[in-house]
Amino acid sequence: MADILISAYPWIKSIHVISVIAWMAGLFYLPRLFVYHTESVETGSETDQLFQTMEMKLLRVIMNPAMISSWVFGLLLVMTPGIIDWSSVWPWAKLVGITGMTAFHMWLAKRRKIFLVGQNTLSGRSYRLMNEVPTILMIVIVISVIVRPF
Image (cartoon, rainbow, N blue to C red; front, top):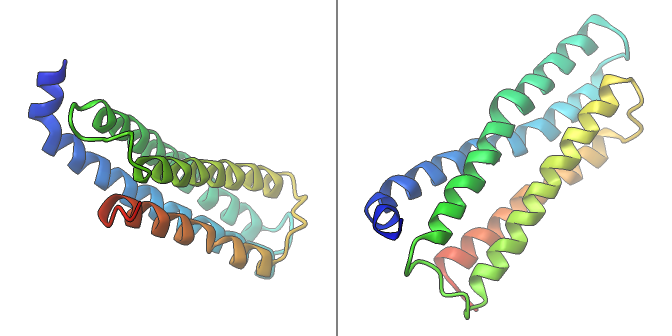
């Protein structure tokens, strides 16, 4: 198995990066849709249904598969011999960031279901603030992996 992972490493890493980019795009865009949904759309209207469809498709068609493939190919990278030095702090910092990113993804999925039943109570400002969460986590993850300051 180790030989396969080592020889496939560039492909696994490439697919991991592509998956992360797609996942991040969704993590940035879905909260922005929630801002506009909250501020500009009347519950139960035709536009409300349109936003719900866009939010659902973004989550199910792009974000969920991208998150799953990010995890799968990331775990394959972790399993590749010689890639991770677990005695360093940086992989643990990255793991904390990834866990936070996944928790944020789940929070967004829960918020989408709240919109679905017409019970959103958060303001557009709240969603704007929450839109900064993936940026902060991305910074932690990228610096942990590239700079490895710890």
